Image 1 (cartoon, one colour):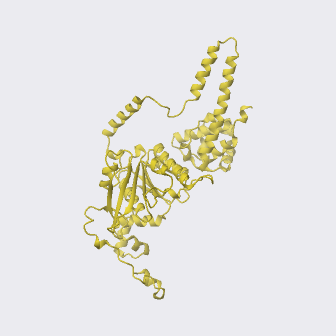
Image 2 (cartoon, rainbow, N blue to C red; image 1 turned 45 degrees about the vertical axis):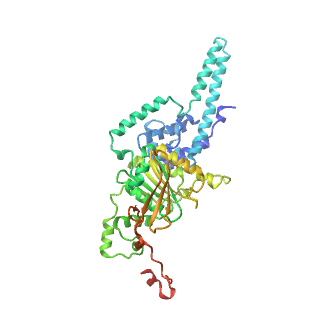
Image 3 (cartoon, rainbow, N blue to C red; image 1 turned 60 degrees about the vertical axis):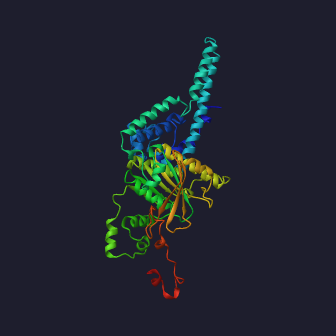
Length: 447
């Protein structure tokens, strides 16, 4: 078999086309220009790597300019070839798959080349057999090298000592982001972006998971910029909650437009111009798209954390024979990889079963560093119990923390002292005739 048969020109074109459409995906793949079989594709990919290294945009215009600067534009087929790549049928979510195919064929070609060299040395009567043996051992040893290979533990200890010294002389906020709830932070030590901390936040429907995640985000952003991806709640509803917290006004009243002139002025003043949170109503996002957007936000805006609401709505594709629990487990692993690779802290919301366990694979719970489970108090209205079910770096007992949800305000507060008497916080029962069609819609709406 000729080495040209050990290649996939379609995969090479599909990958280059996907990178032109979604350049941030270049951070997800770990191949080199010489892994491409076709020389023009090697040139194009090398130019893309250079653009990314210089923090320049990767698009048909910048790519053409870079190839022109290198004197290679005509060699690769000119602007017409770049245009062909953009329109080549590919799916950006499969970029890692395309790269894996390219790498596999590259490794096969390298093996054949190594075998040919060893065979040539073995049949050369002027060379001792030991020379051919040495060539074989050296060649395959180098070829078999793997990323993140085991190293002496002293190397890790030395790196840890250096990191401790750096943190000792740096502001705490560079590596720890407090949640804003001292009782919780006392146990979990906040969120640590440099360590890629993944915090799983679970609970039954309607218990306040999104509200608590929003409270965490408002605390994080005072120290470092971040992102809030809402796969479920519209931008308007999320904004209402943030405005309600900032003004103390009822989100329900703002939704109805029932605010006074003075309250409207207060709302306009609380426009959150200084809030360092990037938001996305991210319907249709999968983990590949999420990673690409986080790479962009970290590069352009220096974000160190993100909130995902919620895991179950990510649109990752799996073969039809993969059960849902296994698919969710794989998504959890991908989210953990995103946190570790990009050095980002994350709060990921997920549902849980009635028994209090994370829905889907138990693997999700294993992958997370911290697991907080929310449950309403069975006795006192307005109290939510936050059970700290896992803390990978914890040194003491886990336990639980009580939080209090003030009426008509989408935020939590410490429940210290609130258990004494919360009768005034009991929700008022709705009238038996909450909506009387004969009375008209406006009368009901204005109640």
